[in-house]
Length: 268
Image (cartoon, rainbow, N blue to C red; front, side, top):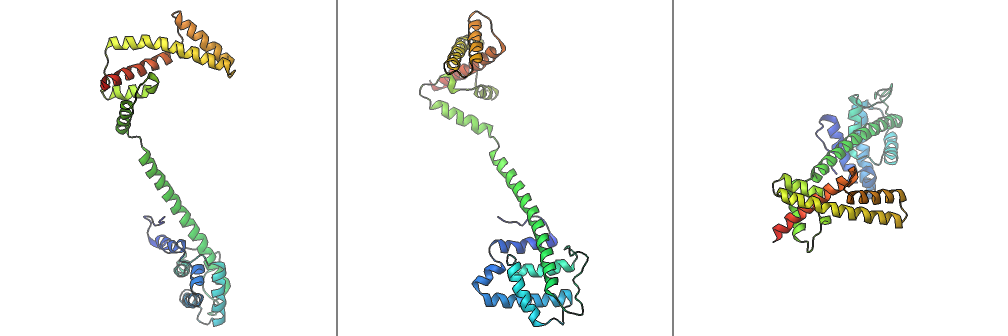
C-alpha cells in the first residue's frame, strides 16, 4: 500500500523514504545482506551529518564506530536515507528535541545526541505515517462504498432475469420492493379489476398465513400470546373485521400477487 499522498515538503520526503523501510529496505535488512557495506555506509552518513548539522568536526572515529552499532541496534527499522532526513529535520526545527539543540560542545558529537535526534525523528515519523494511513483508509472506505452503491437499474434487470427462470412461481417469490420498482419505472401495468382481484385473493392468503403462523407458534411453544393474537386476527378477518397488522400484510401480498401476474403475462 502506498503511503504517498498529496502532502508536500518535508512530510512527503519522510513518507518517500519510509516506504523503502516498509519494503524491507532498512538498516536491519541491509546488515543481513551485507554487514560490512552497511557499517561502512552508516559510518559515512553519521560522520557527515554530525559535521554538517551539528558541527562535530573534532569527534573521534571510535565515537562513530559506537554510533553505528547503536543505530543498528536501536533504530534498525530505519533506512540510511531516514538517518539523513532525521538530521535535516532536526536542524530545521521540525523535531521535538526538548530544550536542547543539535549544536555540539567544542565540536564533539556524542551518541546521546544521536539517540535524541533519532528518537525524536521516530516520533515524528510515526505521527505522519499514522495520519497518512488514516487518510488512505478513509479513501479506501469511500471507494469501497462507491463500488457497493446500489445500482437500481441493474437490480431490476437481475430480478427480471430471476423471474424468467422460475418454473412454478408463487407470490412468495416476489416482494413489495419488486412491485414498487417495476411500477415506478412504468413496466408494471394493471387495471382496477386486476387490483380488486388481487386484493380479494390477498385476504384469503393472509388469513391462511396468520392461521399457519398461529399454529407454528402454538406447537413450538415459542410465543403462545402471539399465537392467540394471530388466530384471533384470522378469525376476525373471516368475519369481515381487520386490524392494522392484518391490513399491512394483506396489502403486501396483494402487491406480490400483482407482480406475479404481471411476470406470468410476460412469460406467455
